[in-house]
Image 1 (cartoon, chains in turn cyan, brown):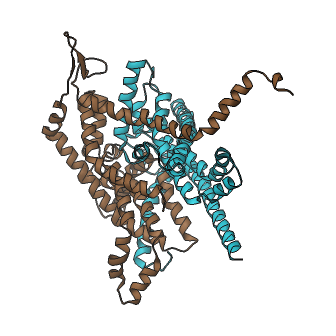
Image 2 (cartoon, chains in turn green, purple):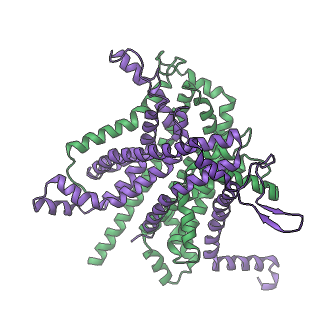
Image 3 (tube, chains in turn orange, blue):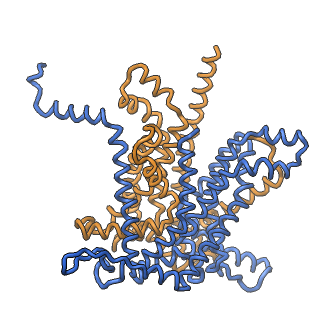
Amino acid sequence: MYGKRSRFLTIMLTLGLAFFYVPMILLVIYSFNYSKIVPVWGGWSLRWYEELFKSEEVWQAVSLSLQIAFVNATFATLLGLFAALAMVRFGRFRGRTLFGGMLVAPLVMPEVITGLALLVFFISANQLIGWPSERGFTTITIAHITFSMAYVAVTIQARLTGMGETLEEAAADLGAKPFKVLTAITIPRLTPALISGWLLAFTLSLDDLVIASFVSGPGSNTLPILIFSRIRVGLRPDINALATIMILVVAICVAIAAILLFRQQRADMRDQQMAQKAAEE
Amino acid sequence: MTDAAQPQPRPLLRRVMRRLQDNWRTVVMIIPFVWLLIFFLTPFFIVAKISLAELAIASPPFTSMVEWTDSGIVTIRLVFDNFLYILEDSLYYNTYLNSLKISITSTILCLLFGYPIAYAIVRSGPVAKPILLFTIILPFWTSFLLRVYAWMGLLADQGTINNALIAMGVIDEPIRMLYTEFAVYIGIVYTYMPFMILPLYANMEKLDGSLNEAAADLGSRPTNTFFKVTLPLTMPGIIAGSLLVFIPATGEYIIPDLLGGGNVNMIGRVLFNEFSRNSDWPVAAAVAIVLLLLLVLPIMVFQHFQGKASEGT
């Protein structure tokens, strides 16, 4: 629905964008501040970036967070794909309501509750069967997969509903077996959604503080846990530098994902137009 | 090559593969289902169980619900003391009320500002629209923690806003903004706004513009058209967006901790601290269950809408 944008709407949009971006821009600018006290300007400098790269603690946290995010994204995408296929393509099955409910609940569940529940679960499991023997990489990754797969499933579900089943039906009519249809048609067509789902799961994992704090053990500090412990005391210029790097990385990833999705949409539109034209002739 | 020349395990493997190919639907469904049963549903039952136990000096620090007495009879002890304790203690009671007050007010603020922004994006041209959408989505992907941190820099006594106001001569003394309820509102509205705008946008995008034209042709003023046509039609978007803000904001931990300091008590913060410092697990579990009960209705409404959306047309 296009139309004229009234002056009121334009003003609200401009204010909204300023509200979103001014704090981030200031955060980035102050990362290049020489002064030790963040909001007091002491001239341009890369001092805090140097300090950041020298910190062993930061590197360990970055490495742990990236490993968790990678494993999480891969498993969450797989499980999310399975879940989305089951929800959209399998029709009615026993337990579908429960399944659908469990699948979307993590999207809105307050993190403190999910974190607490998983912690008591891991502790009880440890008492009962001796696993997990310690809390850290494994427990954080499992916790992250559990909530990220919901986001991936929603992304893929939207795409599955959007692209329809016409091609799959055509393949089936031509004699392809259901499994062949899945691997030769459905999954390739889902590739952009799978990539954006993977990236979404990756960033969600890198971003999570609350759930990771609950299920991490001593000595397993993820990046958000490290950042949080530092900024709790107040403003710190090295965190501004770290924030700038993270914002840059995220912006690049999101731009790639957006372009992929946009291309896919255009290709779909072209296909539809061609099909329509063919039908008219 | 004859069949006999084939090594023995090969047909077995093939048979397994064939089996898998025939039953792949079941496999595909079972794996995420079982995962969620184990790692999502079971933990909630354990929390519920602990909330009905008593604090004990043990590891883990609570009593067992099921006990074997000497006579060999199994007794099940359900202790509702933790819930009574929470409901009687004014600290918990007030914290719940305060959390609800903050999350409801923030949801309304998000709606008041988010609605016109979403509407403005929908009414933008085909070139501006994807770019504007991208600018709304980008902060959503940026670290939550760092977005909250950005506001610490703005709101601090020595922060950007106070420094600017003092330099301009508007004020002499810095205004206290960080570690107040005001800062918590800013933080929630700032971080949750995309959750309001995106569902609203998705809903408005589907609206039929000719309805507005028809209303205008029949002599309806724009304000009248908005309240009689546009607003009712965007109700699903309003509900979805409001729930996406309200539910997580009620249990928010990071924002009240970083921007509210010790001055703003929200239940998420109490829960987190209860667990990490006091290790009174049964009470903490009961606090979580009460929070969940408060949110169970909004969550079910959200699931209902989400379920409808995922089933498509």
